[in-house]
Every structure is written in structure tokens, then in C-alpha cells.
Length: 395
Image (cartoon, rainbow, N blue to C red):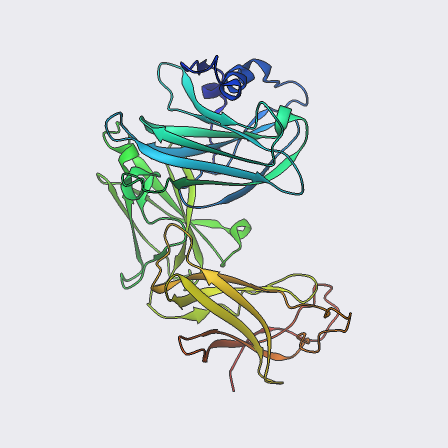
């Protein structure tokens, strides 16, 4: 996909009225003067994934580098949209953020900054957004001195009644984590947000498909052009229920506006597990994806041995993505990581064994186990075993 082109937009900053009083803002505004594009032949301002309100992003910035996350908000002076932007560094690192407003006459104002004046492992801002358009969240380490890996999220502030829905993101619907195509004969319907109201260009939707929880395997499968604020696309027959569908939005034939809203294809409203697409990790861990019923925003997933009738691991899911529903069917990516040993160092006797028949399911409101699917466990990353893995019939 064509990458976002944001660098030319970042070299001019507008001073805010409080800059002289706020060292964070003053340092953020002067940051453009220190941009070094020659150190290793690559720009020090790097395009990053679009930030969707309510969806966390894990990313990293190298030393002397900044990551630039687009954030689309439709605020006005009379009806501002108040957003909390929060970032936390991993492994004892530092992080800093600055939020820039929409480009006006070649200038992006600095709306807020944190982590510039002193070293911090976690930073946060509350921004009352009063302009409509593409905002930028600039992330790096303190003084850009080190590489940093971070979690970043933009959320509607508590009691911010004007936030959410069509007021945030390029797409009003679907939002990240939603189920799509249910009961529509494989039609995915999307609605553009208010940030694109009154646009003077055509908008194109690209549909990318991948096995669940495998974004690195995504391929483009369809393209459609919006009519007014609606854009629809038919999902090809090769796409399976439970595959992930990423909706990428761009100017027709031009630059990307949104790097992708990830949803899950669920043509029929039912619970299921994709045991043909299990991701195995080291030390007996595995990840299984699919669709399950949530109650009051939660679903308890269980991994069991059908051969030994023992529970191997649990994973409590939360419907915390902006496109998720608290009661009803929703996407799940459950990671099962059983403990290897107990407190005395004794090997866990319930660890799964290659060739063993396992099942994955959920607990209902009465605590009863509801099996979704069975499969042969085959965590053979070295490729030296005799197991084959994959779906199996349940007994």
C-alpha cells in the first residue's frame, strides 16, 4: 500500500498563546528546528498507523526518530470533541507525545504536549478538539535519546457527550473490532465520518483480507468508491468466516487517509473458532481466534483436553474495542499460556502434548463449558515431530 505522506506538513508549527508559560508546548513547537533528515539517509519523522479513537496501538520509535500517527476528529469551536491521548513506554523506557491540529495555511498548531520537559514513562493529554480534520500525534522518546516501544490510545474523555460515532475517525462505521457482513449476503457496508463532510474529492475503500490475527498475511481483495457518505463492497467467495477484513480509506487514486480499520468477517451470526488458523508460540502457548457471545462485556474462554478431561488454560476476554458490543456476538483472539511449573518448581501435569485432542470453548452464565471446536495440538515449531495439527471432530 502507498504510505502516508506527512513529513512536509510537520515542518511548520503555530505558536499557542500559552507557549511561554508551558515548557512542554515550547519544546514541542521548537522540535521542528531539530529535524535531522541526513543522519542515515532516512527522515526522522516516520509515518505510523492511523490512531482510531478507543483502539490501542503498539508501536516503536527509533533513537532520533519520531512516529506520526494520524487522528481524525470532527470538532468545532461551538461543539468541541474532548479527547484523552495516553502513551506508556515498555521496559522502563521513556515516551513523549505532541498533538498537532489540522493543517491551515501551511501551519499545524501544537494543541498539547507531554514528556518533552522531563523524562517520563507514561504521558497523557486532554485535548478539546475545536477543528475538523486530520490531527497528528507525534511520539518519540525523551530528547529522542533512545529507541522506545510504546502503547498509544486516544479515548473520548469521561462525560464527553459529543465524542464518538461519526465525530471521530474517517469511518463512522464500522469501527475497529466490529463484526461485518452478518446477514448481508457477503456485503460490507461502511459509512464515512463527519471529517470528510463537504470533501471535494472521491473516496476509495480498499478491502484487505487475512487469516484471523495475521495482519502480515493481508492481501487486497476488492475496491469500491464512496457514494455520498456510503461505500459498500462485496466480499469474494474465497474469504472465510472468521477472516480479518481491513478497510483502508484513501483519496481515489491518491494518498491514504486511514491505514486500515480491522474487522472480522462473520456472514452468519453464530459462535465458532478457527482451529485451522492457530498461532503457536513457544513454551506451550497458542492463540485461537473466532467469534463468541459476550455478556456484559466479557467472555470466559477455556482450553481443554478431550483425551484427559482436564482444563489446560483460561482467557478472560473483554469487549473493549470501539466496534465491539457488550452483549451479543463479537470477535475474539484468545491467547492460552498455561503455567509451566508451580511455585515449588514442579512441572504442570496439564500441559498439552503434541498429538493430543483439545477443544476450545466458553463458559456460559451458569459456568457450564460450551465447546466451540476441537483440534489436534501440534506445537512443533522445529518441524521434527509427527503430529499434523488442525481441526478434528469432537467426540
